[in-house]
Image (cartoon, rainbow, N blue to C red; front, side, top):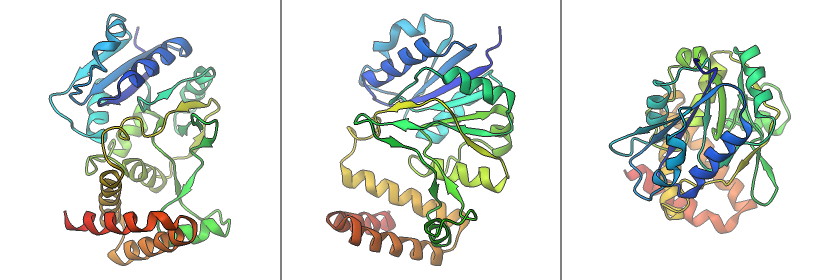
Amino acid sequence: MTPEVSIIIVNYNTGNLLYNCLKSIKANAGTGFEVIVADNNSGDGSISCCADFWNDGRFRLLRLDRNYGFSRANNMGAALASGTILHFLNPDTELQQGIDQDYAEALKHPDAVYVNPLVNRDGSMENDRMPLPVLRDIMLWNMGSPKARYWYKGASVIISSRNFRRLGGWCEDYFLFAEDLDLFYRIMEQGIPVREAGSVIFHLGGGSTSSLWKSLDREIMVQKSNRIFFRKYFSGREYLKSKLYYLFHNLVKHPSAVPSYIRAWYLSGKA
């Protein structure tokens, strides 16, 4: 029987996080589903430790010959998907009870895109909507204006295959970071409604990158991706205004982070 929901996970050296993610899917997703794991040539044993899942016909492994990055690997996984609904899920997440209700809602109203609230290890919540990192939207957001454009983290995105094709998939201009910002910008430009799903998803946060990169290297990659986003959709002037705003924000809120922020900003522009 053709699955209604295709869950797509991009994995790269996430250790037992992937195992826990797949285990949570098997325990909580009762709706007809398939899972496609697009593995970016991991070398840490995270795939072999999930061997039992590959014997279950609902779980499929796409072994890639190198690390293609988040966006391209997601698109490659989506190309194999059969579901009416696609659920893009990070490997450092775990589904909870109620995910079937989210799938039912998405199947009933496939014109919308759905995101899940995320709960961190310390119990704090995240994945509230965030303003686009453009000064206009930041100011409107701070004033409480409904005209502010916004985006969500891409750790859990539920979207119909029709809308996904309409958007052209994940933008492959980004190797990692800002691909979710780009996706939600295009979603808004297309006038596709975004709704917050009902079930909470456990999120380790940074599990697929924190152990691989030093904090400075990670911040340089973030800054590079941010430059790509502004180069695609906005002017260099808007980019500079955004950077100056966040520099001032960090000076007030997180002064200890300013030196590394400036260094990463500088180094990201040299590459």
